Image 1: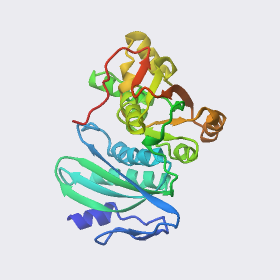
Image 2: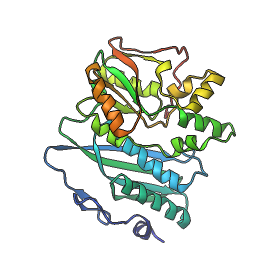
Image 3: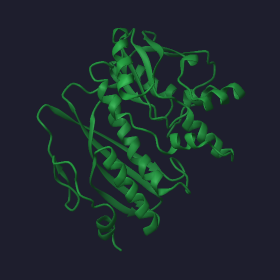
Length: 309
């Protein structure tokens, strides 16, 4: 089976978006933008041994590859439309490919995004997805919009993915819920869209809250005060901290893919309504100030967030 047969057999399913004029099968794809909208695009690469384990299921790898890109789109308040896939394979394994492609197809259908092109090559297992979305002009939520006095919020619960990874590396058996958080994070698409006009800034928590919130305060030229006792934690994480007093895990652990955003105090009631509408917990964890630094009340440790290099 050559490259073109591989694409035809596993990645050439029908397009669901009428705005896509030309998908897989040409030198490039063509899709139309409605008037008054801007293109939003993001790229993430997942590598074996760095972002997933060698024995992880192809279904989980496909899901997560798509979900982490959708999370970036969500953080901008945008609507995901379509994506490209660059797939590097160490060998041609049709069983693996079938499971991977079926999961990718199911996940793309769930989030209403279309695969419109990409590339395949031989080498160490890597999955690179470029996601494209749209947002109304001047409505995107950027990292640079935080203002002095904004409240800082986090969606869902944080730290479980890092706790799961820690257990795996220690040879322990994680709980099923922890494995789901690590391997199948939920991109907060609905929440991100609902925050347009309310949130001044937003970022998805991929490399750890401490580092990702630092990106907001640096881009916005502000500071922040966060209290560790306000962090939204699962019962598993609470139990772990009670035993180890290790606040670095929820503060600096990656792979949460929850949204961290800032908004003025007068929008608090709207945020409560959004949480109810999206059926998701939203927790205030701190306040933006003009200090130009991130202070974490109750934590004296050094930042240990994930670094790519």
